[in-house]
Image (spheres, rainbow, N blue to C red):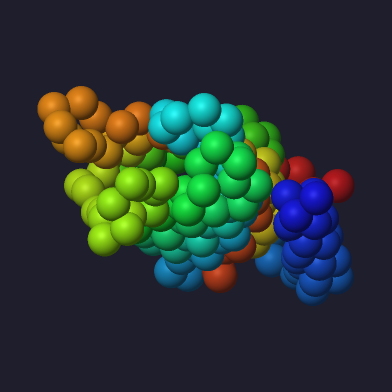
Length: 198
């Protein structure tokens, strides 16, 4: 139920961005914008790679900066804490990642991208030891997806990500993976986009 509510919020934000941009746009769509800074919000659904009933959800926020011909850097913070399975009391997975992306190719309004990142992950988990229910690990992640241009500044973003939580409780890595659906907003429009607004 909470997931449906969050997806409704994402849809409302996207519609709001579209309404604002369509009423205010006077610049041509292929114009080179100012600083290529983006901010985004989404909802993720992840297979936790931990115990039974492994699927959970949670929000993610992201900020990115385009550097040169499709190459850029970004940071993200994700918290997977919603719809906890009854078998996994106390379960929560958080990641704080910084990385690089490439989105230099596009076709019309469709823009695929690839991303690699690293950072810190924190996890709360069920434990027989009441003094040890939370820990942190080095995390690496790779993924990719598609952005669909709604206006010069707003895009819908769908992404798949695969993570490596290094040496989780021993030599084995924990490998959560999941999908995210969200909205990205480019403060000065996309750096270069050539689509027909007619």
